Image (cartoon, rainbow, N blue to C red; front, side):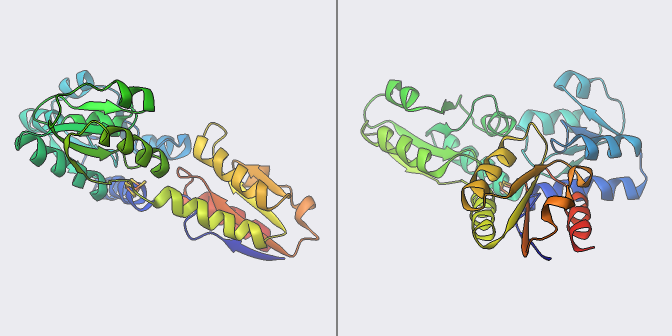
Length: 281
Ligand code: F3S
């Protein structure tokens, strides 16, 4: 059987970079090490790091209680006050914020300083949006739905700057910007959507289209893996959703020509390679 693994399977560039950063710090051996929030939503990775002495800080209060150590900022980024707090406490800051998210921080900081009202298209509860808000000089407005966009009431000709959460759906972003356009604001729109998710989906669709069987790897609660599974299922009826190599049923794949493999955004490379090897052997 022939096996084809999607290049975009698993971690995106920013998450891979953040995870690598934590392991680099572990290698350096200077303890204690903390990550501000879990570095990714994958229990296997978080647990492995815990065994290596990396602790997860779940709140600002926990950060405040520290007296020494290194604090790693994950790819989602954080607001300015967290950096200030790390510095004030005399802790070492290792910043693994994704450069694409960093760019949004710089944009909102600059535009809000210039007097523009920042409008963030995204989910108000998402840590990335929390972090972006934390770089605005004046309170930002978060818009996620068309109802919220319609209901927005700012004076005509108000100066606004619209940015987006990196993982927001592009089509929905366009729709919301269109609604806001009708309000005649003096606006700057910066499309800050990252195409890592879209690329992963496009490639999965292409591979599933030519494959005889398709394997999608990811956590059972991962919504982006679920989405990948649905996309692949549409192109290839023999699509299987597995969490680890242990779930792989080679019996059903045996007489297959081409097997395609993709994985959700929080699936480590190691798990993808194990599945690939098992199929090849
Ligand atoms: Fe990943 Fe950075 Fe894009 S964390 S999804 S590469 S914005």
